[in-house]
Image 1: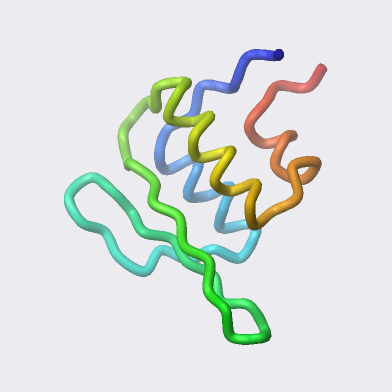
Image 2 (image 1 turned 90 degrees about the vertical axis):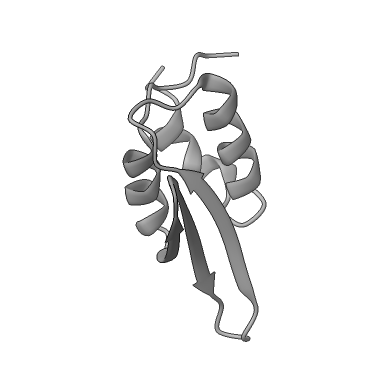
Length: 82
């Protein structure tokens, strides 16, 4: 499996913002992102706002975000081009 990119929490917030997620709350060093779908359902993710995220944390965020966003769309943002 290819290596993940090195990302900060703010990088991840920017990436997910491109998919319609907005920061709705910040508590301590974590941001809560949410997007509301046209049928009224909401999708929520939490991202730590650290300068550099650990690979396991990035992988967990990627896995959680892939429940809401197609993996083919996310992959280019989280993995370097092959």
